[in-house]
Figure 1 (cartoon, rainbow, N blue to C red):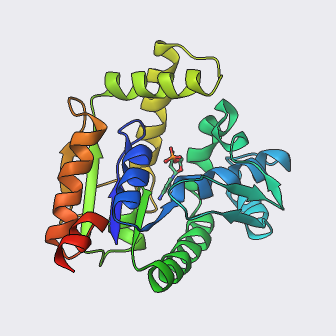
Figure 2 (cartoon, helix red, strand yellow):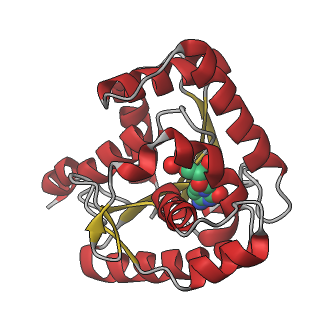
Figure 3 (cartoon, protein in one colour):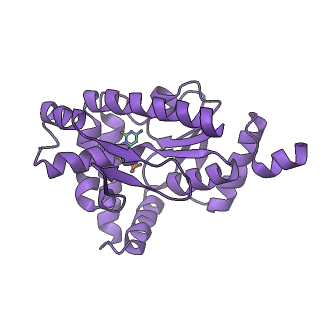
Length: 234
Ligand code: DC
């Protein structure tokens, strides 16, 4: 298992999916789980700052999440919300929702269950989030903490938004990325922070391929063989 943590715009999602492909492993986007709960809160007309109400809504929310690195899939009560959870309304509210301890307890338990199932079925998983190495899976054999300069992260967010047809500009993206990281790293319950034994990687100047090559090498050093390596050793 690989635990991949770090702030938004560091390339986590792209890296996690490509690495999972390369390792023939499953993939879990824990951010998508906080996002779908946030969507449920907004649709129910709940105030994201009202922790008790958020906890009640989260407890009654039925959602699904795919674990394939090739196709992202998130459902809310059976409806496909894969695109809806990436909107600006969700970006704005998700930090407040994910700071509610009851929401974290609920989702961390679900994440551990999914990780156990995928490990049993597929043999490996790459999990991305904010607290994977510190809380969800502190025993993960490889923990990685990705960082990147704020400007670079904002540019990546803008590029993602415009590719998805969402309106964007650099200043807004920078403000949004900054705000979310500040909230995520200063919350009381499991804030964004690197695990003591995480490998740090600054992706500002690196291509995705460079990051993947470095991480695949680390994974193989820790006993997680990529397909290609497995073929060679067989
Ligand atoms: O990775 P992302 O940007 O989709 O995550 C959305 C938000 O969810 C993020 O701002 C903080 C929260 N989150 C969290 O608190 N813990 C995680 N393991 C993953 C995400």
